[in-house]
Length: 109
Image 1 (cartoon, rainbow, N blue to C red):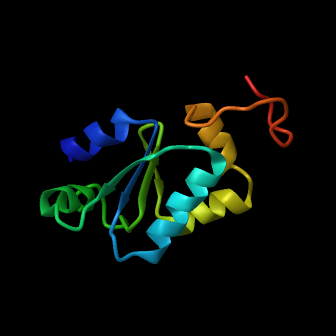
Image 2: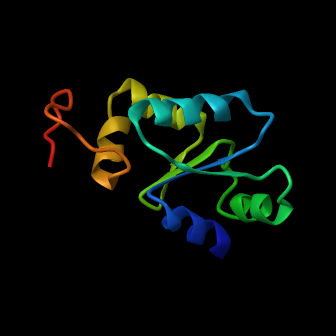
């Protein structure tokens, strides 16, 4: 668990993935479309890291997404945040992306 927390705080946006997970690819693409460069850790060959993620709680699924050191959730939660337009806000507040001019009714700081 300490390893997951260390990695989650090492970068502003962190995605734990599995190479065979199509939703992992979709979530990474969503972050890249926003201009974010998340740290991506594939857990396929790292059983210790996968076990550490599972120790965070029974609802951990892949991709496991952290922004600003906080667990946002898996693909379902991230897509929900995207639909209600709060994902971009969370990324701006955590600073893995920044604004130039106007950010769709969200004040840039």
